[in-house]
Image (cartoon, rainbow, N blue to C red; front, side):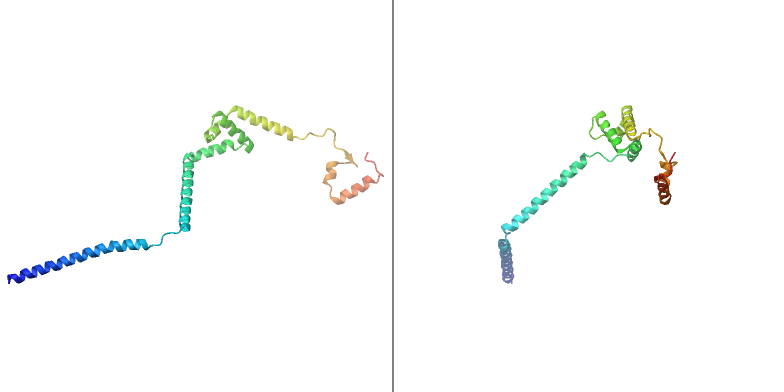
Length: 188
């Protein structure tokens, strides 16, 4: 009986060896099948490759543009204190746009800065030179806009001044004009 058990044991060993060999053969065949599948896959055409390459280049260009924009924004100063904007508004409230430009230009020169801060603009608006320059400009404009008063008294026609004639309605003016232009009466 011992022989039978040994025979059964060797038979089992043989079956196990066959199964192991079969598994190895299957594993060897699987990578071969996968490589065959890869080789049978369709390769992109030159036109498709150019389209994908163009899309990639466009994406890289847009990405570069966005990075540059972010870098520019990082260079900008922070928004700052909202109260500073209020103070700037109050400092420039009594000035026209042209006068505000004068103040800003002065601030650029005084502080040697092409982009003066609101605080610098406020300081420039309080400077005596700026105040004098703006007042001189206002006086000049006022003098140019003044109309001279009439050198002769308003003329009197038919006993009425030109202001009285201007205030008349149409019927009264027509009647006044007929009487005055007939020549029968003198205005004196």
